[in-house]
Length: 250
Image (cartoon, rainbow, N blue to C red; front, side, top):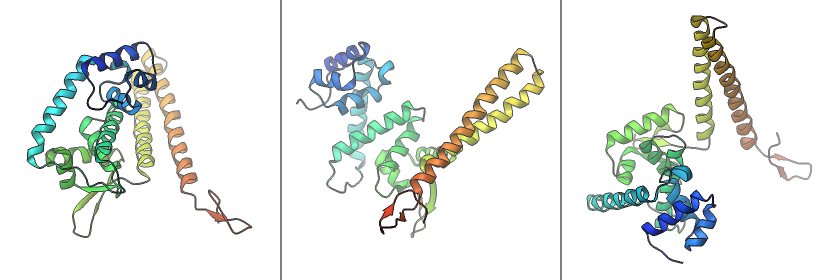
């Protein structure tokens, strides 16, 4: 199986495969590459509908150049435990960044979120993020403020009084609840517009339809998030035989 970076010709084959509707696994098989390599390549360069071979090739060259320029400044990889392959972890981190970005999260926020997510501790200090990502403290501060506001991270102080940024098991629950609250605010605002524009007018009807739709989605999101959290966090209880049964109350 060939190694190393993808060539421009291989990227052209990926673009052709995507245009033909081939799955990542099939494209990987034709190029004799791991499926993860193709997935990462596509997701970090526009996704399956936006992938362009020449654009992807130039972007990769720029990333390589930036990495070479940053290396002398003392960049480092987060310590790897449990016998992990450092290069594989780095590649996965880049893939996770790409997926977060494709979902709509801004680039720097995606990098910080990915970095925090793959740490065993689930937390890092600002200086650790700055050193790992090779960005300015201001960039980290701005990214954390955004993620905190969206419910993705929380802040806490460690024993040395340093502020740490934390992701935990409730991160997606908190994020979904924040999203539900934001939608509820949009619902309230659109319904105010109905009175301003006049009930029954085309614009008011449009706003009312938006409000009804988002109201339903907001309530469903909050309810589903709470139910999932309750099920996944339910404490196991002892059965009549003395064993434990997940999801049962004691």
